[in-house]
Length: 506
Image: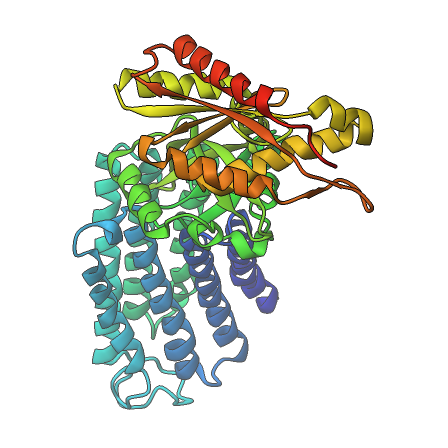
């Protein structure tokens, strides 16, 4: 009957804490707060299990279990509580916040002194089989350290309450009740340990249930330690946009399946890794600096285009929008992206076609007029060279239109070769080409064109032709100051040469 009583008194709460630990951890396996809270519940459960074990096997190893197991679990739970509350108040993120880790030294040092004889227990070592538990100076000092941690936690809770944290109000009530319960039961147990009222000892751990319920209520009412994995799961899975959540160091905390597709990575590779490490072809240092600036000034992105090479060596262009959200007191960047790679390629193709000739890839008439207008507006001297392919109709009639296209492409290749991108070259249509040249380079360019035209063009396996062209040149501003004037003069001079051309030999 006594065993059943002990089981109900300790094992039920222990299992409740284990259940809560699993629930919190499953909410978010990557969150430091979730992991810390889960461990806190685990070691609190160990406290109950330790007391249950001492009562079941009493008096065997009573002192050793009480010191190492019970008080060890309490001390570790105290340190985990302090760590959790420092994170709740974002104390580590403040200036010199890293020095707050020194608060853990007293507790760690006290745990390390457990094996010292006559330190934790008076008159005997912690491993004694004696059932009389007489606290030594070490145990009182240990309790003082745990009490100090509780005071710090209480102060941090008050700070959070002043910030308007509704969950902190629940924590405050739970901590106060836990403190009052524990101090009363512990004092009574020590005071009446040799009397019939020693039963107070049985109820010392149960004050932690107030803390358990305080956190549980804050989770259900105020979304504390909730799972943003579950919160956004449907949105992540079904949204037509890619969605990810990042911290200030570009570490990805959550990402939708579309993000994985865009980056060409697995979920395991991406989560908890810096996003920038998966973006090839961009300046990573500049990206991180800009990212920090966004966080510092809380700048939202709207229709920001980003082009990079993903892990599969595919070029991807994304349209990015972002905002900032608070998750468990920490500022994170919520990013929504749309893949516009195909649309961007179509747009670039349309831009190309708007100013380029499809057959040759040279600039077209629209691009030529834009370029010559710019030169005229800048009052720069230049020569306009007009070139016309001779006997194109005869080539088409004799060898077919494919051979005619080859001849046009051959002329385009020659013009590209002799200018090497230094001058503007365009195909105006049909067999007519135009070039805008520096005055001092015109003669050399014409000579280079004629030399290249002397090289026969192979139009089929058994046939080759010698392509010829007529050239006319006009100068700005000597021959005219408008496009029409310059084109007209060059056209007349080109046709003078064309009429003098002899029949092309095949």
